[in-house]
Image 1 (cartoon, rainbow, N blue to C red):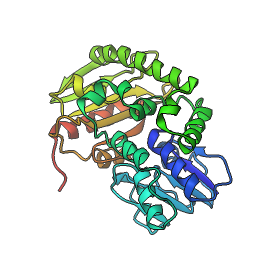
Image 2: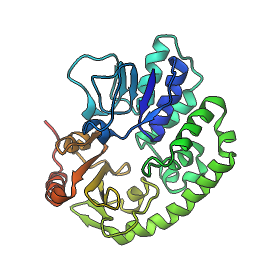
Image 3: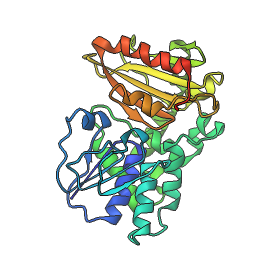
Image 4: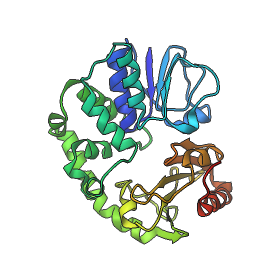
Length: 299
């Protein structure tokens, strides 16, 4: 039995819970959503999938993304919850398999994945242990496999204060703080405002900057949604689009997950992403932006 999940904080916490609830006898398989959607990921019978689009090959599936809700019957659980970890936690607590041990961890996963944050948490993540830890989790061509597995192990074994004292994690947290300072300038320099939508296009940069994904909300408070555009790797064959509602400005009416599902992606009502072929990306982006500019509620 194998866990198949996504390399973000929610996916990592999903793995922590599944290790406690099930008899896992194989290493975690880390997968990005587009690898499921394009069929690149090989899902096996017996696999437990979490925080990813559904595959009929798996034996159990857990998720909370509105765009991923399957039409067919499946084993596992789906709910429009703040995190996939919350779906798993409630499922196994109802079965009596898990107790309240991970209440704090799942609560913090909820607020991080749902971006249910305060301005201070956005502007000073270093003061909030789970938030700064989550920002150290990145996927750069799967070079961080050992690090993701390490965080899973530590979250099962010890508390957050001890985790942040680990030399590697402490170093990564310090690096994140420096990146966030630099990222603010990149956002200011490369963001245009159109119809109350902030559009940060990093395709002209050789190296895509990384930083606090929530920072855009406080930099451009007049915008009700943000769009980030960048190439997927140096070959520039694909373009990655990330869109999210401004958590401090509630005037975006577009269901982001449903919008991006039309273009092969998906996500939540408030945030999502998709991968576009570079040759047709500009046309797709134009269509996506047109819908965002219209800002109509779904009927």
